[in-house]
Image 1 (cartoon, helix red, strand yellow):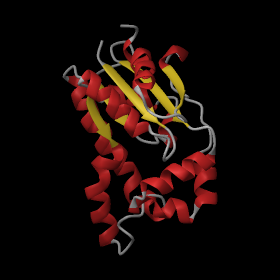
Image 2 (tube, helix red, strand yellow):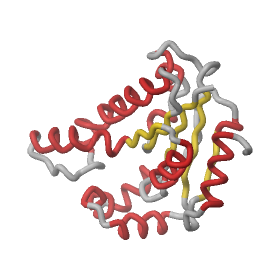
Image 3 (cartoon, rainbow, N blue to C red):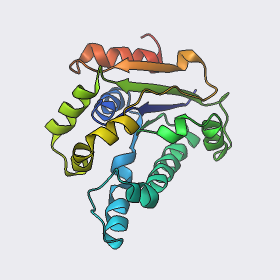
Length: 197
């Protein structure tokens, strides 16, 4: 059965690194919301006279957030529609809190939860300090707003969440990514998504 796999979680948790490692192993299509939205976000923010590197302010969310998810999901669903497994990366905060969101998305391609295997990997770290250190270490301009407004960002974006979608508990993995990425780490995620070898 075709697979639609979401790698969700807070900034710095390592969701992109983990998803890329699995995609490389399995040849699955990869859709990173940050990558797909970036050119449009830079253009929109610049036209509005705002910081083109901002990805977290209220202005950014009003102008760009929903567009980013639409672009990403349209591309992922197009691949699922032709039988490709799709790995999708992003925070998906609002979306995972909406019980009907995933079914509505699948309906766009005439699919349901009975013919697309949907799974979610919540990539987590042990504490906010680890998030901060990883974000600071990667040194991206896109992270400066997060670091400057850390108290507010960490309370709103790093809070633990519970998936509201109607998928089996066995299709949801809360994955502690606090350690170093290695083959065993990727093995665990691969087994969750694809089953035992």
